[in-house]
Image 1 (cartoon, each protein chain N blue to C red):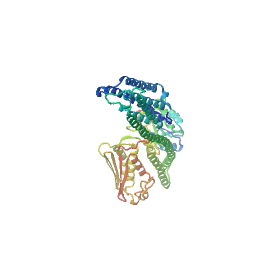
Image 2 (cartoon, each protein chain N blue to C red):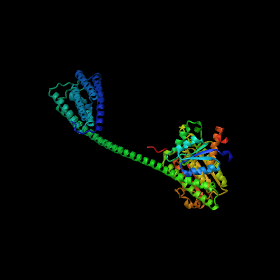
Image 3 (cartoon, each protein chain N blue to C red):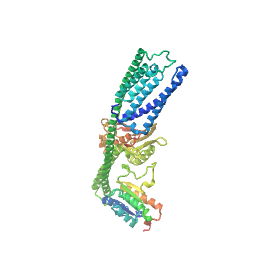
Image 4 (spheres, rainbow over the protein chains, first blue to last red):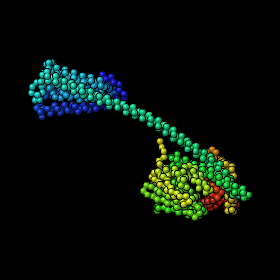
Length: 466
Length: 153
C-alpha cells in the first residue's frame, strides 16, 4: 500500500507510533465498554449488547495479536513491512468501528463521526497515499453499511431511546450524513498529511544538519589533536634547544670564572677585566635562554603549570630575603608590607615567584642609591593586589606603550648600563594572564615607577586538555 | 683549608671542560678530586674510592644517565656506598620548571618518586656556591655519622 521510501529514522519512529496506536486502542476499548454500560443506565438508550461485546472481544483479540507479533516476530516490525503492519491495523480498526456502529444504530448513531480519529492517525503514521486509501476505505465501509441497511440486506439495530423515528432509510438524511462525514474525512486527511509532511521535511533537515555538524566536530577534534601534538613537539624541541644552548654556555661561564678568580694563576689586570666583561656577556645569553624558556612555557605549555593553593605572602617573604643582600649593597631600602596571615591563591608557585622576582629585580636594578622599593600585597575578595613601586629612573612617557613588548628596553634603562633581556615584563604579563589577572603601571621619568598586578585568586587557567 | 684536606670528591660529568673546572675549584679549596665521564665509570670509582661526596651531572650523553647513577648507588650492596652523599648539578632544574623536588603541599607527594640526593646546584653555579654546597653536605653527612675517614689521614 505505502510506496513511500522510509529511512531508518522513519522506521524507528513508525515503530514508536505503532505502539502508541496499540495503547490508544486499549483506551478506545475501555471507552466502548463504558459507553455500553452508561448508555442504557443513564440515558435509557436500548443497546443490543451481545454483538457489541463480540466486536469488543475481537478488538481485544487483535490488539493482543499485534502486540505479540510486534514482540515475537521482529521481521514484522522492521524493514518495509512496518508500514504494511500499520496499514493493516488501521484498516482493521475501521472495520471494527463500522461493526460497532452497525450494531448500534448505523448512520443514526452520532458517533459515526469517530472515523475522523482513524483518519488523523493514518495521516500521521502513513504516507499521504496510504492515508487517502484509508479515507477511501472508511467512506466505502460507511456507504456500504448505510446502503445495505437501507436496502434491507443487513438488519438495522435501532437505537431506541435516542431517536424516536427511523431515519436510516430517509435519503436526504442518508445523503447529508454521508456527505458530511465523507468531506470531513477528506479534509482531515488533507490537513493532517500536509502538517505531517512539513514536519517530516523539517525533521529530515535537522537530521541532515546534525550529521553535517557531527562531521565538522570530528574534523575539528582531529585538527585540535594534531595541533596539540604539534604544540607538544614544539615545546619539547624548544626545551631541548634551550638546554643545549645553556649547557655549553654554563661551562664556558664557569671556565671564565675559574680563570678570572685566579685559580689558574695570576692574570694581568687588563686580562682580568676583559674576562669579567666576557663573563657578563655570557651571563646575558644565559639569562636570555632562561627567560625565553620561561616565557614560552608560560604562554604555550599550560599542562606544565602546577595548580595548587599557595600562600602568596610566604612567596613574598622568600623573595624579600633573596633580594635583601642586593638591596643592601645598592643602598636601596626594600620595604615589604603584607597582611597578617596567609594570602591564599590558586596558582603555580614557581610562576608566581618568578613574577614577583622580576618586578622586584627590575625595581632594584633601576633605583639609584638612597632610593626606595616598596612591595605590598593585599587580598580583596577574589582579587589579589600586588604593588611594586620604586623611586627609580622611571619610564619615559613616550615609551610607556612599548615596555610590554618582547625585547623592548626603555632608552634610559639601556643607557643605565644595567643588563636586561627585555623579556622580564613580558614574563610578568604572561604569568599574570594565566592567573586571570592583569598588569598596569604608572611611571614618571626620574621620579619612579609603580607596577600594579591584579590576580584572580581562583583564576588560574585550567591546563588545556582535549 | 686543613679541615677539608683529604676529603675526597668524585665528579661525575661527561663534559671534560666542566669537569676540569670543578676539579680546579675544589682542588684549590683543598679537596682531592677524581673524575668520571659516565655513570658506569662513576659507579666503579665510587665503589673503589669511597668518596666523601659525589658531584653529579644529570644530563649525560645517553639521556638521563645521572638518574641511573643515583638509583644504582642507592641500592649498592655496600652500605658505605649507599650512604655517599650526592649533589646534583644541572641546567634543567628550578628555573625551567622541571621538578626533582616535591611541592611542599603536593597532595600526591611520594618521597620515593623524588631523587634521594642531598643537594642541587643550578648550572652555572659560582665557585662560592659550589664550595659552600659541598661544605654544607659534608657537614650534614658528618653529623649523621661522625666517624669519617677524613679525620684519620
